[in-house]
Every structure is written in structure tokens, then in C-alpha cells.
Amino acid sequence: MSGRFVVVAGVCLLLAGACSGDDESGGSSGAGSDVDFGNPSAGTSGGMFGPSNVAPGAQGASGACAEGSARTSRVKPRVVLVVDGSCSMSTNYPSSGGPSATVCSGGGGTRWGALREALLGGNGVVTRLEPAVEFGLVIFGTQPQCPLASTPIDPALNNAAAIGAAFPQTPPGLYTPTGAALDWVYNNMFTGTTLDFDQGPQIVILATDGEPNSCGDANTNYQPSIDAANVGALADVTTYVISLAASSGEFHDHLQQLATLGTGPAGGGTLYEPTTPEALAADLELLIGGAVGCDLALNGWVREGGECQGSVTLNGRAIPCNDPNGWELPDERHIRLVGSSCDELMASSDAALDAKFPCSVFTPD
Image (tube, rainbow, N blue to C red; front, side, top):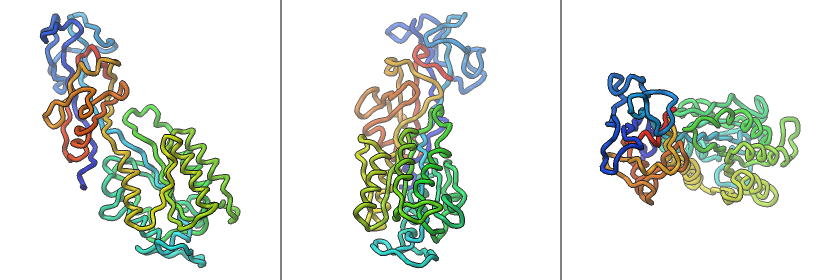
């Protein structure tokens, strides 16, 4: 399973030289033969991407199409792990009681230890998915500073080592400034990505077991967390909430409210409440692994309605356009594999994707 989710990068899409002048038999009324723009010496004199500033279907002075080579890259989800570093995370897991001491402890049998193993163990979700997911980490608490108990790790691919080094064996403590931490995350880790076309879903995973308070007041205060969750929703960040507390009542209802705000009605507002380390690992796999889909970003755009004029092959096998087990165009800048084709891509550590479009429907950036 270690090779299941691998970034597919630098896959060339060799754009066929056929234009709107092509006849139905595949012949061309112009100079539209296939050109390999991966070879700078091949094709026209217009450089790597051929003549610039030419619209789809337009022809240059020689009558040849404005051809070019495009690339795809695996869409990269951004997942920020927002982890409760309060001392109650030292509680044995599962258990309903929390320690009264102000010195936190760790260990594999604690909530903290179970979460760390599920994320960073040999089969942990961060360990396995780091090539395909931009992982970041924020640990919140009130010591040695508040609300961020340690230096946050910015989201990036292949970030497991950095996150492991920043995720101590023992929670830093002491209390639970959830709202202030979430507000910082939404305002500092999800900016400037809207024009990054290979940027996938933006996700926060909040893992907590304690009732929220603030840096200057240890009394329970739910409102800052609610306010922060609304900020995240407005920023199009999906927030999943994992409760590690064996508690009910008002605290449970509060976490449920955060889960509903974080995912919206379409997400069902599920609050995840794993009661064993195995269930915790399964929930993380579901939430993060599910974000690693079968979308591939193009360094250009395909004219709407023209996608099926192109062809896509996966591992040397042609797959059909707009087919339940083939490929489709969810928008002008992405290819999406679906059904059995998606399964094949996800299961392969070295999948080869190739596509060809007539220049009349594709324009490189």
C-alpha cells in the first residue's frame, strides 16, 4: 500500500497537429502532423510552445496550427493538522478521565501517543501520503506560549520528517485555546493559493479532547472556536473534527457544531469520535486518503465541449471520454479519471498517463 498514492508529474500531453480544417478521415488541409514539442529541434520556429498569443483553432502564417506541449500534475490537497497539545491528551486512550497534574506525559497508550502513531508511525497516514499531500502541522496549547505551543510547520509535500521532528513524544500543555489557534491557521496557512491550478482541496483536521478556553482565561469559552470556524468556511477550507474525548453533553454538542460549520450541509457535518487507536487511524485514512483523488491539473485549458476530440491513455490503454470508467473534464483546466480508471491510477506507483488534443481545443499557458 506504500506506493498507492504517488504524485504523477511531468506527464507530457503531445498535442496533435490537427485543426478545424481536418477532414473526417483524419487527413489535414494544413500542415497539421503530430509534432513532438518535447524536442526543441522539432516542429515550428515558435519555441517550446509554438507561436504565442494564438487562440484555439487559429492558424499561423504558414497555415499550421498553434501547437504546443502541455503537462499534467497530480492535484495536491493541502491538509493542516491542528492538534490539541493540552495535558488532557496524556489520558489513557480510550478513557473518560483526565490527569489532574500540570506536567503532561506521553506514551503509546495515551490519546497523544495514539494520534502521533496514526499520523507518523510506519503505516501512518502522513508517512504514506507525504508525496501526494501538502501536510502542515499546528500544535496548540498555553505553554511555553499561547495559542501556538511550538513553531508551526508550513504545508509542503514530503513533509513527514519535518512534522515528526516538530511533534514531541509528550504534549506541551497546558490548556486548550482552540479558537485562537484555528483563527491563526485559517488566516496564515490558506492564503495565496486560489490561482494555483494544481492545488487540491484545502483541509483542516482538528484533533482535540478538551473544552476550549483562551490564552488569558482558563474558563470554558466556546464562542472563539465558533467564530474561527466561520472564518474557515468563508475561506473555502473544509474542517473535519476528531474528538478524542469520551465525553458527552455540551462539549459534544459544541464539537458537533464545529463539524457542521466546517463541512457544510453537503458534508453531512459528521463529528468523528473514534474510541480505539485502530478507529482513529481508520478515520484519518478516510478523511485524508479520500482527498487524494484522480484529478490532474493542466498547464493550459481545454475548450468547453471539445474535450472528447482528444484522447487519453493510461498505462498504454486507451480510456473513453465521458465514460463511467474513463475520463472527464470537470473544468477547463483539469482531467479527472473515474471508475476503474481512477482505481488503476490510485493502485499504481508508476502510472503513465498520456493525452492528445487537437490544437483547436487546447491552449497552453
